[in-house]
Amino acid sequence: MMLVVNKIKKALFIWGFSFLFTFSFAQTYRPIHGWTDQVNQKLESFLNSTLIIKERKVAVFDCDGTLFGQSPYYLADEAIYAFAKENYAKKVDNLSKAKMAIIDAMLHGDNVGVNYVKNRIAFLAGLTPDAVKAIGKNCFYEKYRSKFYPEMRELLANLQHYGFEIWVLSASPELLYQQFVKENLGIPEERILGVKSVVSHGRVTNQLVCPIPQDGGKAEAIQTFIKARPLLVGGNSRGDLEMMNESVGIKLIVNPDDEKIEKGIHAGDMDGYTVKQYWEAHDALTVYCHDADDTKSTYITKEWGIPPNKSHPKIKH
Image 1: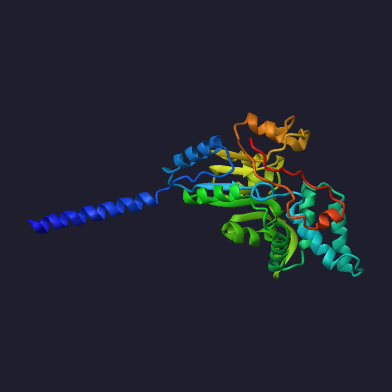
Image 2: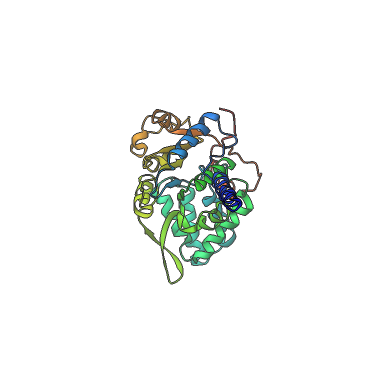
């Protein structure tokens, strides 16, 4: 009889320990500090609703202005301009003159169009992939290392906890961003996507790999490279419109502008709206993160006459 009782006690102990172990490691939402209770409740409810999904659970995020700050200047531009100043400015050899001609086109062109994206790649052409990664990484640690939004870090941690694949999709050169994003967010390099170009004989070329993840090309990049409809997509600007509309779940808009009314062919479905107005009318989840120039760094982008991006100091909403 005593032997039977001991076996029962042992079985109950094992069951209880297993229950506590399972309960302790169950997927539980961790509220994101700095976001409203309403936002946290919507995210928690959404993530809990995905627990029954057995297929791939994908979340996709723009980078500049969505995961980290873009005030006062885009990292991609600052990295390229700083490299140009150090290596090519005021030199008279053919390579330096050719590279500075590209810089001149960037300084005096539309900095959100496809031609601008192509010029960035043309500037980097001829370098090794590791050299391009180092340019982005060095610029990040010198001037942008404090710019990743803590709220977005907490969101990514929640998504990972719930079994999501996290992807980054940027209109900046892919190689320029992969190293520092991987190191700071823990996202595998192959899930950090940007503007791709062919690498030949160990060197970056100016031959672009389509689709180019700019505007509608971001939606095409999701379909081409990620190959799954995302459950959550986060962005911050007109350029993320088509990408965000790929989401079958949460559409997360970060620091949406409410001053510029988008107009013309480029505006697409956002024609006649500000970014904030459009997403308020289309059931996006709006969140705010602090984005201001707190580092007081010296920017070559400023030195070369480019107006700063709009800042978004954190305020209560």
